[in-house]
Image (cartoon, rainbow, N blue to C red; front, side, top):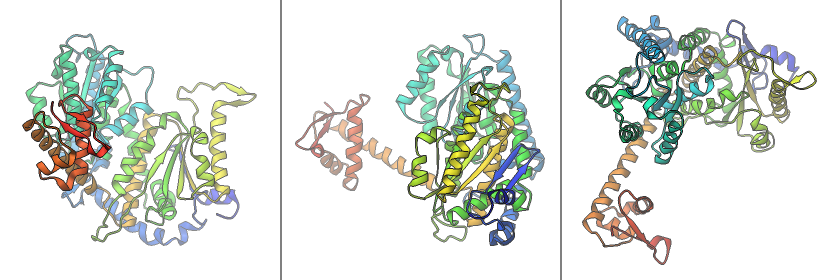
Length: 535
């Protein structure tokens, strides 16, 4: 980086007054004339813009599954490639608003309570990260329902959530939304079963408290019909989980909480328009994609550290981890060549980061670039902040820490991007999500990968299924030989799984640590000679 900071700022910043958004690349590693001379700008981006335009027209963008990719249509149904898709999008948004209004007024309510007071969302990955981010970022004292989440298959985690619900009126006034496209996602199924059992123990009919968001004719859809759940909302195969937050997946929990989903969709639509501009210098998503490419050499050689200087945006880095890493972490390119692409994301919040990892960012290994998120308004209620010193508020301090950290990093040649939002509102959060969705799509085109498939995730699911099958074989063997204690090696041989002895040992250790299956252990001369069996 060289030249006058002010001239760099003027040359490498984009301000969008109608949106209240600004993108500043002046502290990134780009030359001031990047928009004129960078070959990505002159050659790579025209192809990326064309690919994005084709995607929005309905071209198959996920050839692995022969699927179109249509999350942009969710906030602009008129751009959908056929009238049927437009109709189901508009009908779903109307259904979301109507159902949320009926819950709010008490027209739809619990059998044993006047109105629902709590919302339990059961999902995993994109079916939880998006709704969680919205719930936390846009929470208000006037929220209609208090949101809770089952977002893992951790029994202790679910017990903790149920305990918190118990102190907030209990399950009798809790509406549960189960989100799974296929209906067979194990983590979501497990969470649903735990929730259902908790309702049953309380003497409540789960179906009278339950809503499904799922694919048509899925197993979950069949359960919801059979058990007469309160409502069912659609998920479509042309919307991936990590880009589903502007579908019913994000809209229904948000609307039930009391968030203005119309403003959220309008913000996303406004950013979509701004990021369709086929001019890198005037397209905020293209600017971010260009910076990502240049900072990471187009190979993900550096991590992206996301530092929002606003408590309400704390969960944004978690949301981005799935959007960016699942989209860009690919072994092969579109031509089938091994490229091992990716972009790692992690983050904290400012100014907490001042006391956490900025020391390493400034003085340690230079394997990162930073994205600072600045919010112009200090308070969401528009009221003045307390002056903690003469003419200085806590919000002034927050900006001071952001600018100071940014300067301290620049002094050591550590690059950064600064993104400014006007506030944290439904509209601006919609803009933020749409901006990064488009950035991911453009960057993927620049590096020649498919942003819309996830073969690694599917491989992990298959491996997990194989482990669970081994778990079942172990239990069957142990039950056939009660009061017969053996080592993990002996049990592995008995079930023809000697190559999996380590996994057998770990599974047996877990079984013995928990009471459900009655497996016991007896210590041996070493930790590896422990005996396992059913007493």
